[in-house]
Image 1 (cartoon, rainbow, N blue to C red):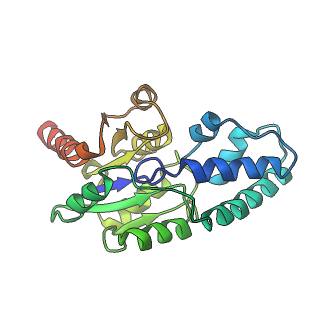
Image 2 (image 1 turned 45 degrees about the horizontal axis):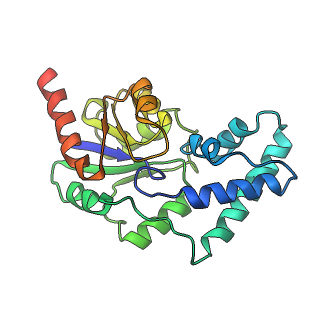
Length: 226
């Protein structure tokens, strides 16, 4: 068996609107100037405390803790807005169905998102049966620490050489390399293709429709080189 572990925000779901709006609320609620949209998207993938530390390194720990709580509160409120649009990227639903139907593959999630956020996504998309292992920021250090990817491999019983991480950020690529797995970037997310390649991506997938073929090509290349 082979294990394909996917990131969520920026890889499966285009969640930038909710993230950016909640981040702006977190800053303005404390009388601070909010970061630019570009700066906010650059930290997507990190767990929330690390993301806020990157955006506001000058703040002390007490203020960052307050900002974390403001972000969470704002994000929950924003999610109740029926106008909020956080769609799957075009072609992702079909790709997950195709990968999930394979007898030789196990699917997993490794994300900076909370478990509650993943549960909402799974309920919305009917994906509860698709992913054998789900690792979130609730239980692990932030990416690029390899802990959540190692936990996914342990739960699935699959070795690093038969595992690939698929994600849109440099944090995903760095985590994969630290865990000894394959690293596939996606070109439709929040970090640039050049950034992904510099971070060590073995390949960058240009379109969601190419996800399955690129995963197969990666594993075929590894088997040939072994």
